[in-house]
Length: 458
Ligand SMILES: Cc1ncc(COP(=O)(O)O)c(C=O)c1O
Image 1 (cartoon, protein in one colour):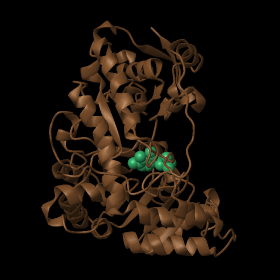
Image 2 (cartoon, rainbow, N blue to C red; image 1 turned 45 degrees about the vertical axis):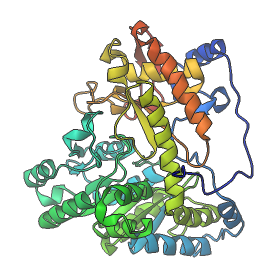
Image 3 (tube, helix red, strand yellow; image 1 turned 30 degrees about the vertical axis):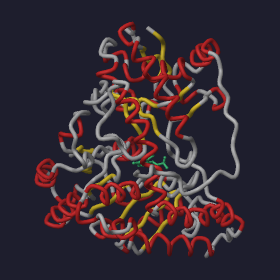
Image 4 (tube, rainbow, N blue to C red; image 1 turned 180 degrees about the horizontal axis):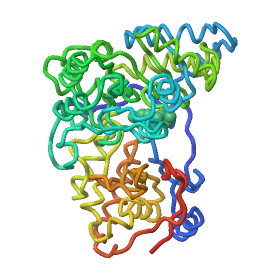
C-alpha cells in the first residue's frame, strides 16, 4: 500500500481556538462593517485570512531566538542570516527589512520613477500599490490560461513571452527599471512559474538589457512544484532548484512571513552593487541600519533557521499536500475551485459559485462573509475589492477572476480543520441559489482599500 504523506514534525504546544454561534457572528460581522479584516481574532474559529506570518516556528527556531545578537551594528545574527540567504539564493548583497512591502518600498524608491513601466505576472497588491503610488504602471503579462480556473496548466504563474516582449518593445529601456517575477504567483492563485519560463524571461530581458527581480515570498513552494512537474528537476533538491532559478535573476524582494517560516520579516537580495548602494540609503531612512533594517537580532536568527527548514522536501511535501487535501475535498463536493491547486491556498471561484449576485455588489466579498457567518471561518476576497480603482480614472477595476482565498498557515492547522472548512462550504454551496444580493462600499481608502473599506449589506 502506498503510504500517505505525514508531517515531519510533532506538536509540543497548542493554542486553544473556540467556536461561536451563528447569531454572535451575524452581530460581530455587522459591527465590523462587513470587512473580515476588522474582526478580532477570538471571533474567528479557523483563520485562513492569510498564510503570511501566521505559521508555527520550530523548536530550533525558538532556540535560535535566544542566541539573537541585538547589536545595532554588525549583529552576528545578521551575518548568519546574510550567509544563509547568499547560500540559498546566490545573490551577493542583502538588506534586511521589517516585511515584504518594506523591501518593495526600499527597492522601488531606488529604482522606480514616475511614468515607468514594470511588467510582471499578476503583481501582488502591495507591489502594485508601491508602483502606482510612484505613478508608474504595473503591466500584467501573465499567460491567458491563468484566468480560466478549469484549465489544467502546470505553471499558471508563467509570463506570456509575447505580452512581455510587447511591453519591452513599446517603451524605452530607461522607463523599465526591471521585470518582476512573482514566485509562486499569489494573485493568480498561488500558481508556480516553471524553470523553463524563468529561463526564457531572463533571456528576453537580457536581450533588452532589463534586470529581472523576483518577488520571492513563496520561492520554496515554487521550487517544490518545479521538482514535481518539470521532468529534468525530479532528482534535484529544493535548494538546488531554488539556486538555479535565482541564478537567472538580478535580485529579489522577500516577505519572510511566508517561506521564511517566521512571523515577521523581509529582505532584499541583489547582485548589482550600484542598486544596493542606492537602496541602502533608503533602507537606513525607512527601515534601520543595514545590519538590522527593522528586524530584531532574535528574529533574524529565527529567519536563518526558517529559510533552511522551508527548503526541505519533507516539509514542503506535507505542507502542499495539506493544501491539496482541502482542494480535493471541495472538488469532490462540487464546489468550484481553481485548478490546479496552488501552493499556499485554495481559491474558490465566486463567479461560478454565486453568479446570481451582481458583480458590482462584490460577489466574492459576499461569499467570504457568508463563510464567516456559517462556519466562523475567515477567508479573504481576491477580486474587485482587492483590485482597487484605476488610479487615473478612479473607476472600479473588474478583474477576470472573482476569488475567495482560503490561505493555509504553515504547520498550524490539522487535516480535520481542512475537512471542517470543506463541509461548511458544501453546505453554503447547496443553498447558493438563494443568494441574490451582495454589498456596496460606504467608505474606502484611495489605495489598498480592501484592508479598511466599510461595506453595507444590500
Ligand atoms: C507575493 C507577495 N509579495 C509581497 C507581499 C508583501 O509582503 P508583506 O506582507 O510581508 O509586506 C506578499 C504578502 O502577502 C505577497 O504574497
